[in-house]
Image 1 (cartoon, rainbow over the protein chains, first blue to last red):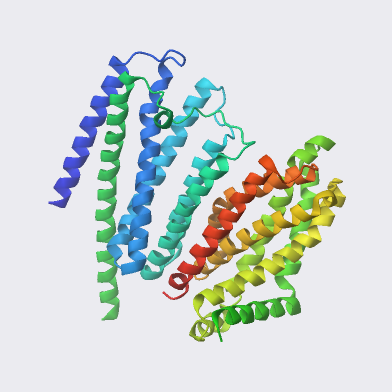
Image 2 (cartoon, rainbow over the protein chains, first blue to last red):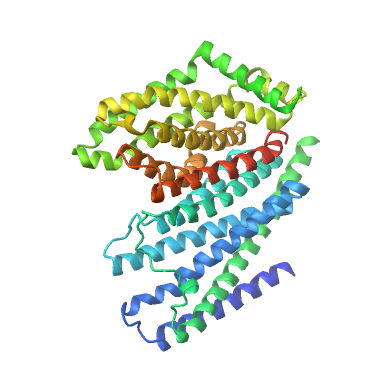
Length: 226
Length: 226
């Protein structure tokens, strides 16, 4: 049942994504200033928004794990962090490609980009520490705490990049400033939805792996106890 | 014995041990001096350029030395199971954490007080012109480094490759703090007053300190008692 749900979600995600890419590549006109490369925002921005969504879920489940010590929450946290880190990486890579085309450089130490890179590094720390702790309860507890610490840093990064004297050449956020042309809004929203569906399917796959892993571990412990 | 008295007792115990053996303070101070020397080979700069990066240089030295000091915080209690004894004592976990943070803070301030004049001397930076505000910035940012560092030192105390994991976790979290401290320190070295645009990073430092002190004091119980 659960496997079927995962497959269904993955298929739905693929259909929505491909349909949206079709619209983006064949029906939308080139943008006036940037030409064809602007289409990257239909991947770049949904990746960033979904990374934030999954990191937020990870924060909530990390707190729930500390409160209840239920390992299901830990599995959700690690799955969401892995998918979120992947989305952040996708966001950085697509941004870098766009920057090469538009600014002529792969990377500028613009603080908005630095902030995103830092977010990636914070959660990479989470993923690096996990395998280094052997005992399951300790691993789950420490990594929950690391994910709470990492999340608490995000508002501070946002504050740091808005400090006066900080230079930025990153375009303003299209949603806050409302500069996205009306014909782009539909595909943009569907892009966010498609990315969310793909990521959710990946989270479900990872959750399945985590529960199988827990089962194997407990069987192994039972075997050793005999 | 109240929690604060217990924290004070722990801080005094740690400082006394450290001042007798001088193991981390000697290591951190000599490390700071070595980095200062290395920087002089890395950059060959004119006077104005040197002033423009002076705050950044100083905070790199301080944060490297800080990681060495906080790493010892909980690690020194591991041999002979001292950590278990401390946890079994009537002192609450937050008091243990606060005591460790205060002692790390004092040690790092000592190392900073040693390396600041050397920094001024090697690089011909006139740091004395704004001493009051400079001390304020240094104390605020140092507290941030030690409070986050001590929390992560507790998280990594039972982790394999502890010495490697601590910096991986610590530096990404410290980035907003360091952005604020570096900018303000550069401005102060340049003889600017701590008003207007230069005062904004101070809010960031205070916010960072407040958020992470509260978060660490609240979460340390989960870290130490697994």
